[in-house]
Picture 1 (cartoon, rainbow, N blue to C red):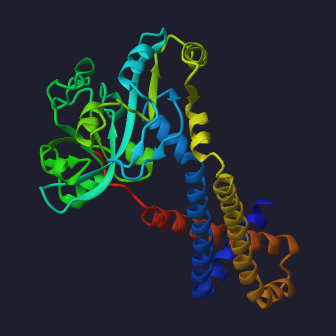
Picture 2 (cartoon, rainbow, N blue to C red):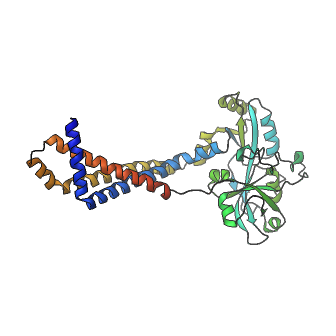
Picture 3 (cartoon, rainbow, N blue to C red):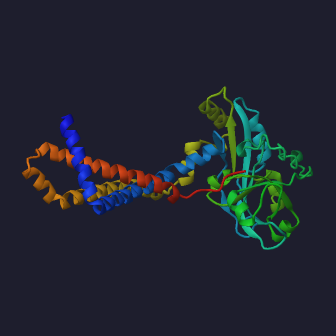
Length: 358
């Protein structure tokens, strides 16, 4: 068996060297097929897992929802955040056993610009909180807590701290320490410069869109929504000593007016009736694997078929059938290995990348 394997490898290498053009084309064909599998499976897998990954990235264990977030045409910010008195609700949640932090999150459309002109619209997120969700705990420029809220009076000092995503930083050429004007209206934006204290894509991953993040009360201030203290969700982080399920049951009993969800349940709630999206992602994965494998088999079969005369001559010269099978297997292995390595090397540059956080 060892002799047959050695002879098969030697003959396979000799045939590949004899027709280098065919060997190169075969390797390229396999590389294209495997690249198709890698990229499309990656795309389908990303569709299926991106939501849960985004939730986990925000470092929340539970989500409190008071109703659907709705569009409010004609209103400043254009979004109706259903949870009213969100600061007080969060304070009551944090008082429960097993809860480390509760952060209300509000979303509004805001105008932004590095100077008081030429404004663009992006999503404004209210919710810096203690900074853990954006990795700001050790940031010397960050002020923990919503000091401007001042127990509901909204007359505390404005920190004017803002976190922007990498795409926005690249678009405007901004870095930490630069200013960005933000407001729910153009006039409010011109009067409210904020200092960039960090560049993060945390909420960009969560929302799937460019975003800026401020302290909740300061977003409410610049968007004119301080009267209702509205929020879309409350992100709850549990302590290590309590099971998340136990905290969830306790909050459900204490706050029956809210729907309490785990990360997975929140993703399902967001996807909701969009079953077609999930089905399409699964179909994409299956089809890409089937098509890719078919292409690989077709390339290898074509290569063997084109060498039928050489194989016939080898058999006529006395080479046994098992050895010929070994030659075919070695050729398939070598071509597949070469195509696979080439595909993996090409897949990384072909994949989209994000700017790094700072």
